[in-house]
Length: 237
Length: 398
Ligand SMILES: Nc1ncnc2c1ncn2[C@@H]1O[C@H](COP(=O)(O)OP(=O)(O)OP(=O)(O)O)[C@@H](O)[C@H]1O
Ligand SMILES: [Mg+2]
Image (tube, protein in one colour):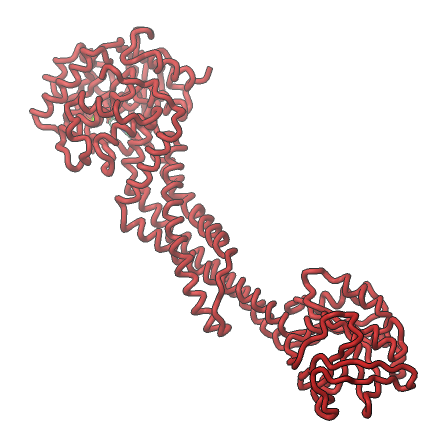
């Protein structure tokens, strides 16, 4: 069975945050990443259960983004194992990883990264398009979910930072991923919008989603189920 | 969000296509000025290519039409080796001539006629009698001026055509009866003048009858002295045809008659190379220009491409999007370029050949093909650059 077949049937059976699968969404063992002489990550091991909302915290340069890039299959570890939703993903080809990424992972970025010439709704539909097929009604529901249905036809440049981030979250949610990864999603937002976005993530957790949040803000960290701390590329206990 | 449905049908082609085209057109409309440069480059390339090919094809066709109009350009005579030739005795079997003419490629022959010459007596004076195939003669003699009409049926024994000077001296008119008597006075026929020929040449002193009648009158059954052919041939082609015929029929000698339009053919042959060179250079410039534009376009869109990949676009989707964008630009540019090119062809046609250029449909697929090829070549490196974008690198926070 090819990876994509396997994924298709998985995705069909799991509406969102499925519990039919194993309980472990993330399982990493002895993960390491070197950039030449720089050891950005060393011997990192932890797991994330389905439905868990965890925070990764640590000082600047401690390897949080590096770790998240590996978790999102945008980068490869130089050592160690990574099982995502039961699949050993580290050894997959780039093409297979792309398939896994669109089937299983929703990404939220600090810089939002919306396509500037597509409307809010179309940005959400783009993720549907690469996943399977764009569905306007469903994309609209996702926007409603983040409270932006009335801004559906606005371009990113016509939206505030907080609104852009909520569109980004709607886009991350739209394909019912097994895992949502957010790298400092409130880093560019003011306190009000930070509160809004965090509230949204908490609601998603309540709906059963699995979320990994990278943040510098201890208050936000406290609101998650568990904090994984990094220090110089290692887990700090 | 309860009804998020990731089991959406992947097979919905039309929906996928709609989203894809939306993406392509949106990304095209945001970068107007850049797209404008690429469009302009392809437009210029397409215009030059279509102008030159229009000119080339049209002038070629006109040239062969002119050759056609010019008349006989190949003459077939009996091989003269060792024969000094007593007058009226040495000929070729008309059969051999027919076979030689039949051996030429069908599409190349405009017309052909055998000629059998002899001296006869017309009522009171002597004249040169020419036995011909009237239909063939008409085809190879487009410039003859004929008063009255041509003899149309090849086995018409009752009607003849006479040269202008004979008609004048003997005061013949259309419809006048004429008696033709051979020199031995053994044969005599009564015919009518159907047409009076004015060529300004030797024909003005001749009487034209159909070949079988001439053979009877001159008592040379199944014979002819020579044949004239009009074939569509440019430059060296006529020589090649002649050589080929002479090889296959050892009894005859085949010579192309040099005509002025051969010089035109040579001009076309020469500028053919020049035009190809100009078209190539222009296409290369187009490629460089489009390449630079697409490279800049990929660079400007790097974060978006990275994002598209991060949210699940495969390399195929990225390639497809750029190819589709390039194709759209290309179609618009070539459509405009064809119009501009046709106008340019008129200018060139007037300047070089003093002729208006007629639209030739073959120019359209040719221009499209060459322009697309150029655009595709131009897109290879930029698209490869787009495929090689690493999302993790371009999506990093500043
Ligand atoms: N592509 C790369 N090449 C070389 N070194 C890198 C690369 N990416 C990250 N690093 C190094 O790896 C270490 C961890 O970087 P990373 O971006 O993961 O930190 P971070 O915890 O996300 O920091 P911040 O809180 O500032 O975002 C740093 O020392 C960084 O310089
Ligand atoms: Mg970081």
